[in-house]
Length: 201
Image 1: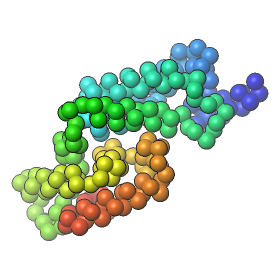
Image 2 (image 1 turned 90 degrees about the vertical axis):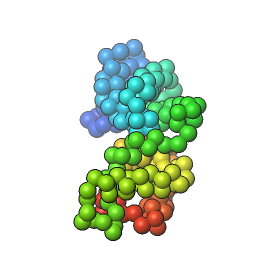
Image 3 (image 1 turned 30 degrees about the horizontal axis):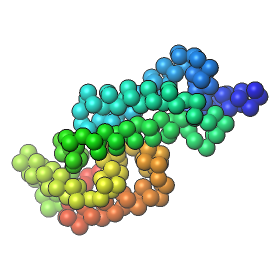
Image 4 (image 1 turned 45 degrees about the vertical axis):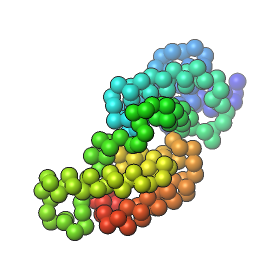
């Protein structure tokens, strides 16, 4: 019991989550509800970056928390190396990938989501009229479609969802170094296409 008390205490984000998980495992639904409140917006943000659809993103959010609750006993209380947040995001990410693969609607990344990426052409930086910007966005869409699957995923998570490399690592369950490498290759490929992104600066 002492070990449980140690791992359920503390003030850090990780320790706070462990405390709530401990309580939820003992049947305290208010503790699990608190976990939902803490992470539902981030899960929604992740799902929306895949589908650009509010209803489908909400469905992923609901399914994520349903599955996490059902598997809560499998989440190791004494394994502090695995944060609840990363475990939860991994469930959400897998759901997104599964749904994405099964749906005929998403054979390629939804191009509408890429409209939010702010870009400028290196040769027309001074000319920012609507026609030019739309033309550039169209070019960017076609270039991103030629990235590998994991390069596209890293790019979307980084520049659309705004996740840090460490967070993408947790979500995709790959090393931070691999995330950075995929990001580097994606950027180099796009740069070869003579496109310069404001966000890269």
